[in-house]
Length: 314
Image (cartoon, rainbow, N blue to C red; front, side):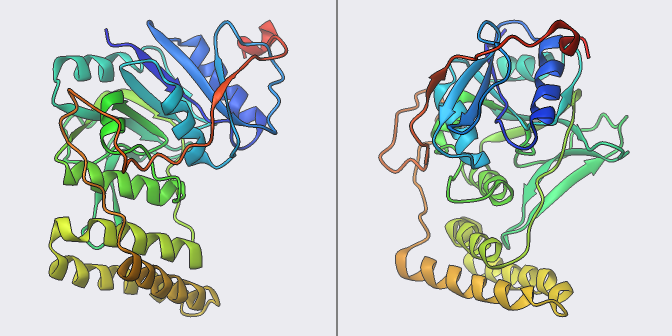
């Protein structure tokens, strides 16, 4: 079976990270390593050096933490999992088997179910106007819908593919990093499938409103517009912006969002859209000078105290 790196960034509350690590360790897959990228300010309260590899990162932004873990990974398959998620026994077996059996498969999306929700998220699709479409279904559904990428916080990737697409864009938040990744996988025709036999309880990325979010939307849209037909995608883009801004008309945020769209568009038209040109052949991946892997320097850090037995059994 393909080797696996499970990457859990140390974000949010300590209790959420503890809960996720307990869940993973209780159901630990074979032939895997567990990586916890963390900022300099993080102090691990448990000694897990024999079971978890800690990766120090100078940033606490979640995309930088994911990228630090990806760079430190030594495995064939990378599994991104957000702090606060819960897993069950053998949840990694089917995705790894799929990736091993089908060498053209780039990524696998498990069933993602948010706490207290009956809706199952199967993956995401990139809308040509720069939007994200979440593909949902029933818990018992066995059909495989067409998706462009997994949900970022519960995703399996072939490691070579993440190198090919340049990793996650560290200039974006998690929502638009997910949208950007879906667009890039689709552009390079890298196949992603939903796996109904693998399940994670966790949270979807959420879109914020305001200047920064609107600016990032333009950055992602203009980066991929040419690959999806500029005229049609531009019309869809304008429609998407209007749909998003109408509910904000009674809010002061509509002005900030409008300015974000204008600034983001101007930046892309003046400086270029930062479009990458990388090979989609994942069998021979070489580092690229245009790679978009904005990762602060990372290294291993030893843990300091031992997690007590009763917490393990919690």
